[in-house]
Image (tube, rainbow, N blue to C red; front, side, top):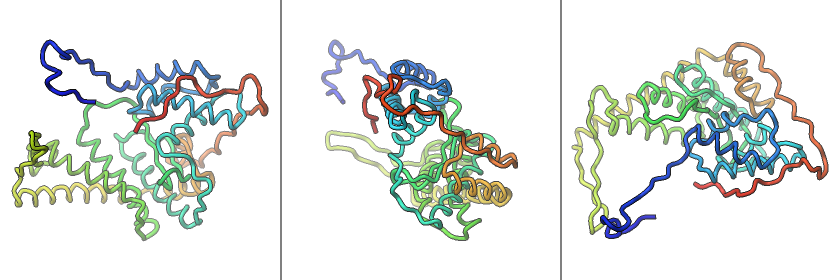
Length: 323
């Protein structure tokens, strides 16, 4: 909501309070408050959930607890465990599982290679966020997801970390090229994000050695006639900008491809695990990267069928997630 400037003159509504989204510590504390309303299994780690919910508001976190309680109730559990929270988080981020979607074995295999490419590149690069899990279970519009959890909230972005993020985004297409000798449309969103990041690095953040610390974007301003823009970059300079963006993208794509070629055995092992279990967690991923056979998935906790007093219900005060 925006107020007219006349209302914000001194002596009127000149005192404004900005309420931002909670940080990682705040999210953990909010989750603990809402978890008191439902029976929680001892394996639930609020700190891990807080790391995996950046950008969530208090209402979003209440909704997360509510969705997890619903998952536990459908499974006739006495308490809400970590799997329920993981499934609830995935549903909020990406939509419900499309269990009715029938994927051909070739499609499942290609998706497994694509997601394994992302995961292996992320595990090899030193400054990448830890890989939390990889799945080839279709959700929403996605056929698979590689999920990384940041260890802490970040205020600034740094060039070395952004360069690694570019390589991780290209890991899916690089895996298709190295292992399948083909290309699919599954990398389109990866390319969009990588191109935008590389363009911002060159044109906004001054992270190009050849173009220097200067902003290369058209300026925009608002007036009574609406939003106007002024072109401040010449055609020759724009060509240099495009060439620099291409250099960043090509170098990180080559890095991703090189990492996968050097870790073929790990990619193949991860693909085999995904085809067997559909979802693998951080422990199984670490086993694969260290050359060990991945441990089997944890068996589900014992359930109690029927309407027992310990069966959780929806958390009070829940609200739908905001976009």
